[in-house]
Amino acid sequence: MSDLRKTRKELIEELEELREKVQTYESEDFGYNGLFRNNYGFIVESVPSGIVMTDDHGTIIFANKLVNSMLGYDNGELIGKSIETLVPERFRGMHVRFRAGFMSSPSARPMGKGRDLFALRKDGSEFPVEIGLNPVRTSNGTVVLSTMVDITERKENERLRLEGEEKLRGIMDNTMDGVIVFDSEGRIETINRAGLLLLAGSEGGKIKNIWDLVTPERRDSFSGKLGSARDGVPVTDYETEMVKKEGGRVPVSISLVYIPQAGGKFIETVRDIS
Image 1 (cartoon, rainbow, N blue to C red):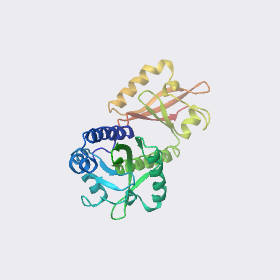
Image 2: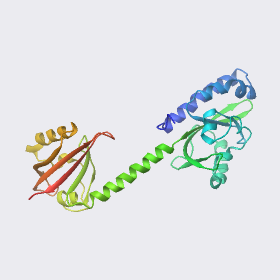
Image 3: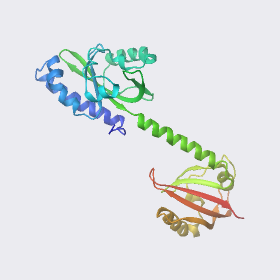
Image 4: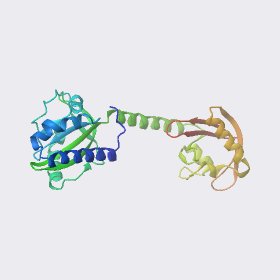
């Protein structure tokens, strides 16, 4: 989908805008059925998210083309079905209770905050989703507008990222050299076991910023090396001294690599040459 990075706040804002439009139509006496049949369709079809509307009994009264395509249904096929049709069977009992609780105190909110949510396709397959809920009070009862976003790609990217971090950690902890990853402000994001032993004195030591390790007289030189790495110029075997957390200095040979993704990260390898 085009909006995989949509935030929960954006989902709520989108639903709030739809709710205001629907209540405007309702106030103009379009009527419950006329509202959805004659006037609501063009609104929800213009939204780049899956939209499902249910009545106060949880019966689906509208589903836009995008959500039908997402779930594998023909247009109009979901009308009259329970919203639990779209919920994996193992979660249906919980969903019924959640729906009852929502209707007893309806308000705009993301569904299942802090939990993984899944939608059920017609063919029985499942996929991860983010869902936003917004109640609309009409003269014929309360209608719930639900926005559904397929986050399969986001979840896969997250899995690959965590897998990559785990592999990197394994490599880092099995090298004899210190390895430090820090951002453009010098904030250290991770440091391996060898780096901690060399610069912090123990595996349990804490070092917050790379600049805490740079000697005062080498700051300009080190800043220049960071600039070179950022410009894509290889920095290898740069000999300098680093400050140890418990005091004293250690002569080291440094190599630097700059990774522009994720806001820019430096990976520094540090070898004790004393």
